[in-house]
Length: 190
Image (cartoon, rainbow, N blue to C red; front, side, top):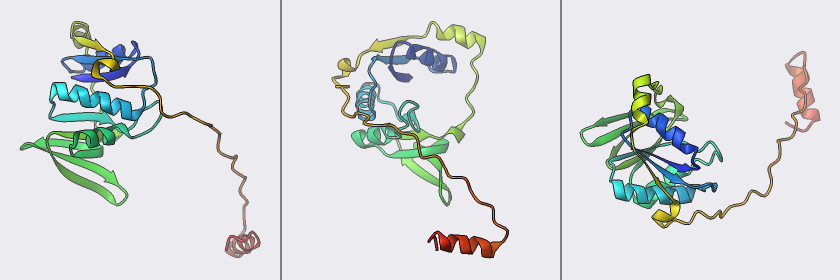
């Protein structure tokens, strides 16, 4: 099953997921910009109805780049989580999640049910074949609203200001290390 929270156009994304192999979808229709905590609360309610063993989310949203929903959802449910997954292996009722960290790779073993947020390196998405695209048109997509789950999606954050970073100053070429050291000393950098 796949879930999307957004406007009617999000149904196209769900149809793509259905063509790739999902059996059904849920569109929680709203034209509001839904903040990560509200998304997590809605998904918590959906999970309560569906009882999955594994919930896979993207690492971060493309609209606000927040990287919060998966972690908030795991906290609300009290489930273990594996973030930034580059490999997921299901075996013996456990989920082994490999993730990239500063020092290399870390593998976590999670009990199910669990939340996993994915990294781009997790897999290469399969392409939907024409027969599967046609079958996806007949697969069900339930439409609901955030209010059906009793979740208030009113914005609690407001963007105060967005500015571009300062223009980077041009660098200087130096002939040798001693000239570099003297210029750094003159600028008070060392």
